Image (cartoon, rainbow, N blue to C red):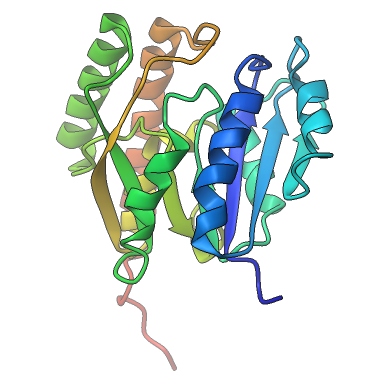
Amino acid sequence: MGAMKYSLVIPVFNEEGNLEFLQDKIDKTMKPLKADFEVIYVDDLSSDGSLQVMKNMQSKYPEIKVVSLKKKSGQSAALYAGFMACLGQWIITLDADCQNPPEEILRLTQFENEFDFISGIRKKRGDNFLRKTSSAMAKFARKAILKDPTQDTGCALRLFKKDIISSIYFFRNFHRFFPYLARLHGFKVKETPITHEPRYKGRSKYKTFNRLVEGLFDLWGVFWLKKRTIKHGSKTQY
């Protein structure tokens, strides 16, 4: 058995009704790739039965790892905890609500040989009006302030080389700027259209107003970071 190729990282907070459905789709999508893979579920202190569902699934799917956070920490912290547990050469992220169909992973893997970071662009989004509007406002602000060309920073489905996680600075809510941060550090980024579906079960855990306000604060923080990042190719070696 060779080196692990793929690590799927999935943050989870109160998604017990979606997990078995999601894992079945992941299994059917990944097995035909004929590559070693692992699925890392990161429980962000769920208050429902999510953690137990994940533990139960391990008996059927040996590729599953479960990371359980000791306090509610948010999506970025859950992702980072998952990254630290990864063995794969490539990392795949997606949400546990099934809005990003695992089958769409195959649209991303076709670009592995050309790019370091491949992210989805959600077409015909399955979100409500408020979430779509807040995303549009955030996109406008990022483009105006950071000159960020990313079309869809909110898409959770991403595929990227593990090397990237040791090259960028992680902070709270980094996931909203992930493609931009990869570009900032010299990695080749590709966006490609994917399908986006309504939630399989349950309700969104995000508060739209809070996301918008926090996003504006984060934007200025990333702007500060951009101004202080040493440009690749600018150093002199003695």
